[in-house]
Length: 379
Image 1 (cartoon, one colour):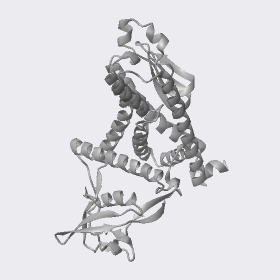
Image 2 (cartoon, one colour):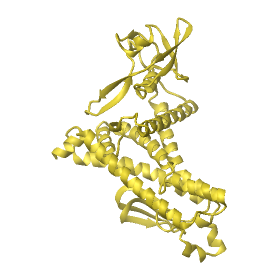
Image 3 (cartoon, helix red, strand yellow):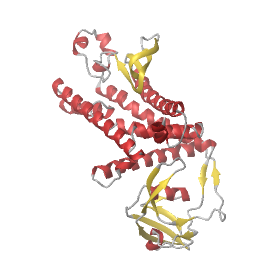
Image 4 (cartoon, helix red, strand yellow):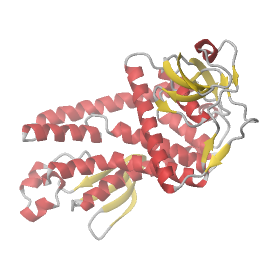
């Protein structure tokens, strides 16, 4: 129990953290696999299995179209298995396919046109993005969007803002060419840009002025004790001058704003990955299953809404990760289909088998790495 308390950051129950983590993960997996399933059905492709989890089946049922819906023992993922697949990875069972009639080939995944197979594969990640957009849209329409003028009411002495020449009364209108509407937008761009040079456009008494600024790195600790390195420039907005307002948005405005939010999160995720690859990122900020379980449990103690928002953020991450060109992932299948389209025939089976083994090794190594990194960073 002492170990659990250290991992969670405070003395919550084991059930709370496990339930929060598994609930969020299962919802995201269900949305992802439902994307594959719905597009497959739309393409008249037969689905044999829709599984949440791996390993031994706990319970399930078979529907009228002979799809087995099941929940399995290990709830750390899921899969959709199509007719004609050899296993869960959606590679062809050549012996079975050779025995199919023409009518059966029309409902077999492997014998359908490339564009249909690609559509089915990409539908999983797209479903994750749509899920996140739907959540953000619902929040913006119900709770509203916080609005505080992007005006600088005070400048911290010796901070990055003072060094860059920002003055009291300046209104920040752009950061790296991105339009700034609220003070929250400033935080959003600054926090991901520690030690990175940014270009600002400020409105100073009706005259636009360009400034360069490099946010300083600051270690932020939340109320649960989690630490995160973020950027900070040292400006303050005085809420007494302009109280925060929450503006509820119409459906079209909320949808467009949500699209922008998802795009921003994806861009920052890719930038963070690039920084890690070239050695400029902070490996401690990389989160794996232990950190996800930790944050899920902590947010579960705060209520359902924070947990729903976390589900949206994780859904974006999982959708994006699945598009990486790694065998075993959706992006790996899309690479195989692209090569097949160029060559006019599939890659030899031996090459695909080696690629699959490499993909499994890569994913397993990554899983071990982020898990160990989680434990080290938490302790």
